[in-house]
Image 1 (cartoon, rainbow, N blue to C red):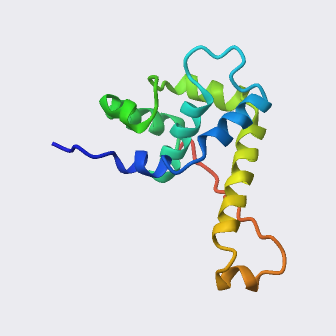
Image 2: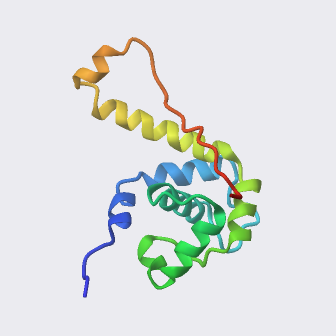
Image 3: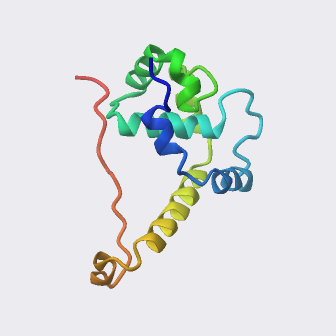
Length: 136
């Protein structure tokens, strides 16, 4: 039996959650939210990205298959496709944009002395613009 943390939980423990909560408070992300918090949404989407999920249905199926381990992943409530779709549609995108900017700032400080940072004259951002096929 495994007694250690799951790999996903080990990755997510390095995130500055106080900064994330500050971003959520700034844009009132938890306003009228009963069970599916912004952190739960972020963790679901991060899990989907890291495991190459292709659709909301795929995310739901994968997380429901591991429903006994959701708590250990850091996700506090069950994940339904409709709940995730509503959260993606309604929640303010600036929460996650600000959090991404803070993570970029942390990465810049960590890699300031690396040779890669010297080669760049300007800031470069790589954004994933992959399209997701919803039907075959």
